[in-house]
Length: 376
Image 1: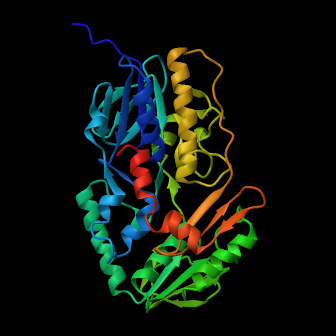
Image 2: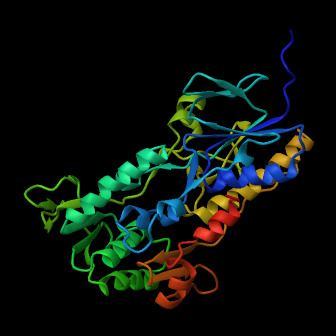
């Protein structure tokens, strides 16, 4: 008996904002002769912009995990759509039958492959794959926050800022310190005049800032951690917030380290295709592009990828592909439920304070918008 015919197949690795966005758009646009397969280790999308509020104990919003861990519905396995809950361990892009191999040994052929596996985090944001394991993980961290008196956040990016606000909301009297290697929070992509506002936003809430310092050993010794310069900081709970790394080890082992930058990001053309691999696209945090990583940028990548996939599925040798040009930087930072600051890199650089940011972002953390946008 001959094998069943192979239909044009788009295989998407990763179900974050980029991967689900591409899956949704192709589901609407492709006919039933094309297959769309989504591979993801979790049976839910993690709404990461709300993760800090999930990780810190939350006495106001019961069952907040249901707003952050958003399950994939039955439509992800209907008609020409299939979702596989597993991890990709290798890619074989050679020859006329390219495929990926899953951790259970299954091979899945593709016509076009989209890599959107996101980032790997350390500390509390290193979520397990199942909801049950994640709830146990959260309980462990909630207990640590409850018991701690001197909480130190290592790193001064957006995640650290938002952790600090959530901790201060829930624990008004605990000591909270942010340690950052620069003299202003965030990085120099953002203008100093706004970064000074970011510093002030935390200091107004009695968050201690230790700036221009680095910590190598993050385990407290005798109730303190010590910076490289020898400064001792009281600490009985240390949270690493120094940013994630791209989830691309399987890409390097399959396609070679020359497909990645030294930081592990995937080299792409403006069409979002991998260099020397025109059947493979990338989107989201793993992409090597001179911009800050964010859900908004990931969705911008997704728009380019799905447009080019539709073009190539209709005409495989097409050259009139859409290109990505980047977009302006924008960063809203929530400081608990009722505060924050935001920056839009348009005109001279527009900033907003507590009133606007709390209504736009802090109060609901985009939960309803994400569920609607991701069709979950």
